[in-house]
Amino acid sequence: MSKVYVLHENDAWMGPFRAAFDELGIPFAEWHLDRGVLDLSKAPPEGVFYNRMSASSHTRGHRYAPEYTACVLAWLEAHGRTVVNGTRALSLEINKIAQYASLQTFGVETPRTIAVVGDEGVLEAAKAFGDASFITKHNRAGKGLGVRLFRSQDAFEAHFESPEYEPSVDGILLLQQYIAAPQPFITRVEFVGGELVYAVRVDSSQGFELCPAEACRIDDAFCPVGETAPAMFEVIEGFDHPLVPRWKAFLKANAIGIAGIEFIVDADGKPYTYDVNTNTNYNPDAEAKAGIRAALKVSRFLGGELEASRGAVARRA
Image (cartoon, rainbow, N blue to C red; front, side, top):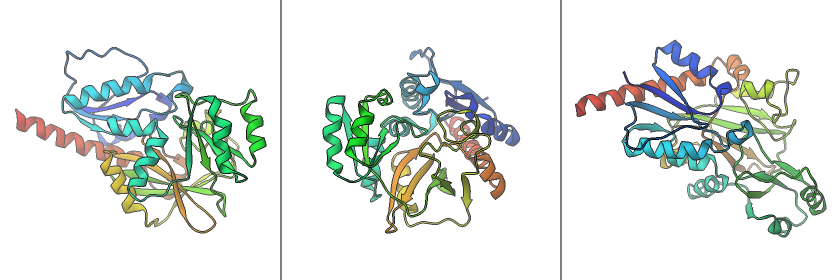
């Protein structure tokens, strides 16, 4: 019998989805794509394939998981399988410059960003920001990897020449305009099946590395919160925003079925979209307080895709 196949590399993030699939009685299986063997002479099974590969996989020792996933997605798509968050979504997940370039074509403002390949050009490129504050981040990141704020060129030079400097796994460092928000929070907007589910307000006063997953909140040393940290995530009741139609158009054009989009508003009220996460996770405390379970909505959406896929197979037969 056909089923939903979840492609991922992190067991710790799968708990809410396993529970939702079981609750709804949707048959599913997991493909852990850290490594494996792909035989192109064979056809993939029938079903729906949901890609949850993460740009931060290398921090868990899974350096080539995205590359392997790209091979698997190409194989699935070549055989006409239903893929949620396929090749295009993966390419954006692991490339922030590609995210920004695509967002801008839909009239979505992103922070000024300079991509630098090779350490020899970094200090010179940073001078473009003059006396203004700027941040660094990794082009292939996730969990806020490499994100640091610098108030001066001297501070950045000292960091760049210190042992604390960590290059991006893909060799591309981003220098980005710092958006000073009047209040220390950002907003993350969750979409499932291309539709808005909810938005969550995220307190950014603790730092930049703002992974919402419960596993990050408790166990992951890359996230700035621990078991005794204050609540950082709160679902916004009745959220709406003028950018929602543009975000939806961006997701549709890039065949992204499930994603979280993050933006920040400056002191003049101007919004800047700075991250698209196609491996979105959900904060359980915020959801419990709001009475929402996004993982359940994801499972229902995938269950609907599975029924449609079965119908298509039956018609072909």
